[in-house]
Image (cartoon, rainbow over all chains, first blue to last red; front, side):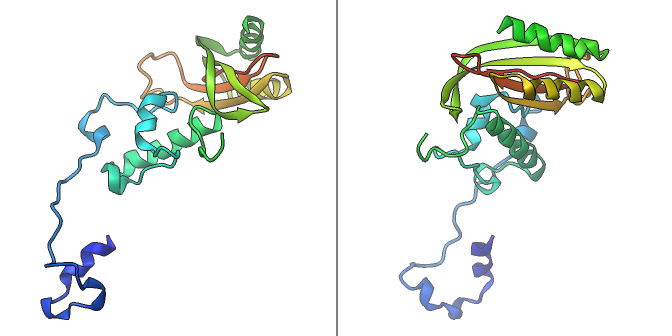
Length: 98
Length: 107
């Protein structure tokens, strides 16, 4: 979010932190579509460890919707599903030393 | 394991609930250790019942040794493809060697 605000600034206002960054280029933008909206048959279920583990990092953290492209609604459902799965040891809270 | 399931089924039925599904997942690795156990038996119990039955069942699960975890979840009738089930709960139990989980629904 914050990174996009920079492009609103006029050209001449380049600041130090941009130095060496090369010409300002808008990163290629591929619109991510929420997987659950795209495929209505996909269900978010706390028992489906295979599916849920696609939305957590190797360390067990949930991936932000910014990365996965999930819509707010499905991200929310996913969050509760992951938390449920964690509470019954289907998913780890952390992989620190377990 | 079997006795456990029968026992909790009876609890639900004793409260005028109906057990729609019993799904035994068997011995599974836990994502983290619980009470020094690395594996547990999971069981999913799907039932439809009143709120009282859920309370009663959860109370029983809590009191039973060997149950590591349980989880009761309300199942939305609309999202449920089988019209029967309403909510589930999961409980895990460790019978001496390991743990078990179950789940079940209610009204």
